Length: 89
Image (tube, rainbow, N blue to C red):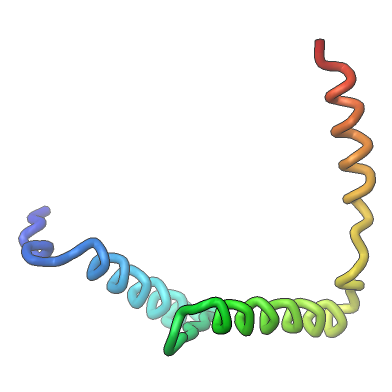
């Protein structure tokens, strides 16, 4: 296929269009999608976004009947990693 439609476009243009197309394709196919617009991307906005996702994860865990603070496999993973390291020659 011709790539003439890319003439005069930037990588940013391509990424923006790919993002919009992905969201639209998800919605058309009945899949959930969310787009967030940040008016300013700085440390304060990122902190707010991180806090939003942390709270969202906690709430989703409770709604799904999952303890969002439980990490049953974390300690086992650490033990196994130490064992694997000890086995290395």
